[in-house]
Image (cartoon, rainbow, N blue to C red):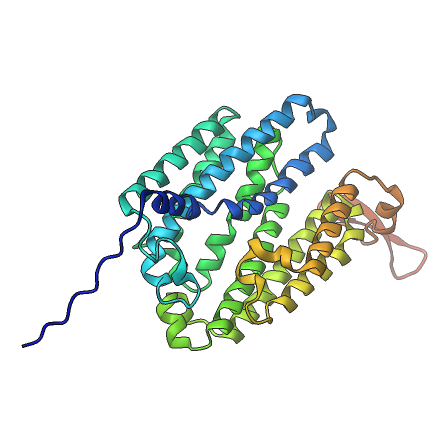
Length: 350
């Protein structure tokens, strides 16, 4: 009887393993921490007195803490996804999928980075540290069985994108732990994140093509279709704009002039999602789309500027013209005969 020699286990040098452990932290994804900025800018636009030279130092420390917690989540994501990444035509080349990463050391790396991030957050304030811990916990729910929300259609998008408002809260509490952030802005930020994430899923599914292969790589793809993902994209975009509009009307009516730029940027992102090997699948590579980057930068600058500008005439243009329904008032209603009038109480809206 002939015997087939076993496939030798690849060996890696210490330098290769160290490099792999740095890679799985995905420091290049730190660009996503820019989502912290609205949480910094909005309270400063409301209360400029919050600004001080010390705040700049606090923001640098906050950025380090957020990066450590986010990288901790990336580490465990890479380790737990290694068996599935081996089924992906591109992700199978990731360090963990190739077996370069030492699993035990990666778990230590995961915990240590979280402890450092939350510990540094405590030097800022308790609310900041709490949000950093929640960000880490959401990473656990997203990756660990039996919950592993990344395997559940739609829930995967919702739980991954909740990191957007969490990052906003981290920026907010780095500036102030007293002011309460508007719920409308948080929900809008969450839904915009869902819009981006659903388009990422759509692009991935289109790129793989074969649904059986896609379903083996990511369980949620067993129930997703390109059509269902695009329908969800419409839902997320509509909801995001609803709550953004609520925030604009309630707090900063001047932001309405930046809305066309927001809509244009979202439309460009949708278009890019249809491209082969789209950068939408790897947001850290979106810099390769110069038109999108120009639109995004213009939108960010205009919206940030409008937060600090006051235009009373705009408020007059959009002033309510209908009776409200909560505060008591009176209107004169003609009755029959016409010479008599009835004074009727009406409860207007706020």
